[in-house]
Length: 302
Image 1 (tube, rainbow, N blue to C red):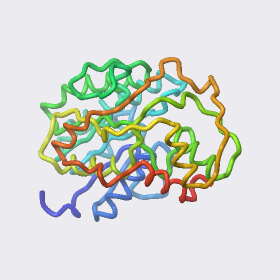
Image 2: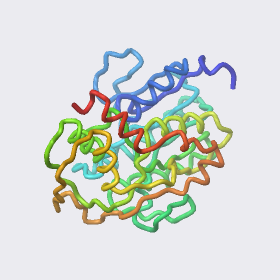
Image 3: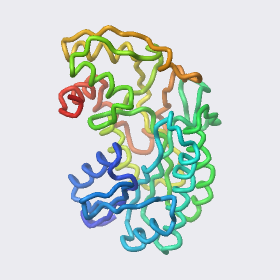
């Protein structure tokens, strides 16, 4: 494996929520970090790139010849209105990346392709990798189509597909549920409008996800699909209770039907046994209350 500080990690979507945390982690470990962004960046290690155009990503890959790649770039908001763009980015953008690697005659030590637990849909309470996925929205389906197509690359490249369950942390957009709730408590709002309070989700810490990716990059394993999860769930009512305690503030909850999705998945919990068998159990270092406390104490949601 050699001196890791001399290794290059390449992160697509480096200015996104996950990408920012990945970049900060690898920089703290002394790695050289580069990545793509869809918007102009002043960082010389960030390359403006539309991954739906293979020529753009190939030029970057060929020049850098990265040792490790984490592909996070995606249209990830479930309710995104432009479904065509979602499939173009999530499916064909991924194929462009893998084809660009092969055509550049490089063979990275490991490539992580980020899929999603949304591929499972509403098929059970504890979701393991050996279940047959049944997505119920375009986001989940776009990720499953991507997975099915890139399995053909398992024989050519060192690929791991990850299926992260819900995660959150400092810097996540207010479009997402947990940052919205944290912001309301941080700003001492009197009322918050929410959807179904009794859906159960894993609300894992983005730092946990980053460390799992790091361990998977350095592992011997390849040609695998693996959940990034803890197997621990909470409902929204519990999130609200934690934040009442952290903030010493109470908010009136109003359930707004427009926030209740038609095909709401009631419980989304991962089977973590495969992940833990590959990299060990890192989850004991994290708790939802700690994650919410970090978010509440951040200036991000003021």
